[in-house]
Length: 129
Image (cartoon, rainbow, N blue to C red):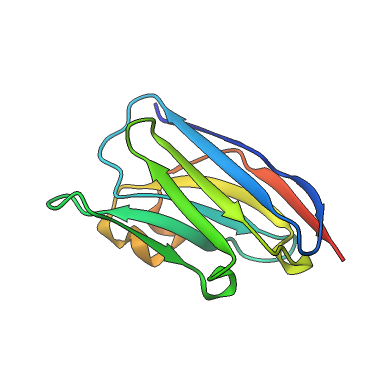
């Protein structure tokens, strides 16, 4: 059984930075994607960023939601089965519960929640103005 554990959430002021980390353990079939989603109260879960690794070339590519491009950076460590999200210039609109997830479908690069099979419990990020 796959387990994902997030860490690094917290409360910051607008313009500050946070780094989230996620460790994956247990049985892990090939994971096309390791990425991050977020969900604010009253809103749907949305994809934030993911690292997609092609099976044939083993080349990894990062994908981002438009709202975080240029501010967030996602990195994946294949050897350690971890994925991190460096968040800079945070805005109150970034306030949400952030979830780590792994995708076993090649479509996971499009950041659709339905293409992700395993999820962490979430870590809260709160940004005040």
